[in-house]
Length: 379
Image (cartoon, rainbow, N blue to C red; front, side, top):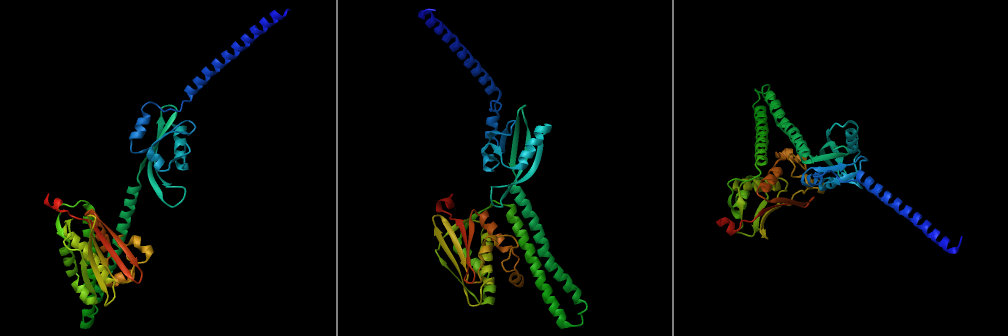
């Protein structure tokens, strides 16, 4: 074969082989497109918008339990990490629905994060989404769970606190009859009966007051309250205790401050703070009530030179029935509700209360309320 024919044959062979490779590449590309269409991770139309719009935490999973769509709430709850579900409890629910096809609803308690003891309580529902996907929805029930625990604790505390004076009254009443011929014993038992009856009445009144404050979070009929008059009234209401314990109460600070609110409730709150200060102060000590206005906030601070509060108890002093010194509170007639009432009164007025204390040096409770401006008063 001459050289010219060899060249032509080589060119023709090259064209055939090249055409074959091009055809194979085109076929492979089309097959890849079809495969990508089959395993396309996108969710059905409209699901993206629904997941983004709902308040519930939403997660869409494919056939391999890979997360293909997740809502911000689900990420905030820590339900998803690295395109997968974090908690085995949720994975178990998903597997159950995938096997049976039956939707599953369950209340679960999950760890808030990888460390620490905080938990979240969720109501979770898992169901099929079309033929290939599963939808997991979770609603936060942590606050409802917390309120239920508070309700149970409150009922248990009421039962415990009321049982003591009621039991004492019952025993004293039984002891009166055998001692009827002994005037000294009769007077002694009668005095103790009076003390326990007063304590029972005080607990009942404060429980009713606290329940009323918790039932109404918004003030009705708020009026302009003069803070100077508020402080003077609260101090005057404690003059009997002050004289009995031989302590001195002084007031000072800025004058002319005004706030909006219920004067009776605000007097009650400040009265409770001063009464606590008197109760836990030694004879001959001083209690200060100071007023300060700063950047539209009226601060009323009650400072004592009493026994103080341990640091580990500072976060609990506003809990219902909590007492730092159980024995001292019972001897002085404390119910453990006074500071809880103060907290609710101040929060209902749009303010807050803070506490500083050092054992052996005393405590300072500071009420902070929004100042009533003249413009707001005129309106």
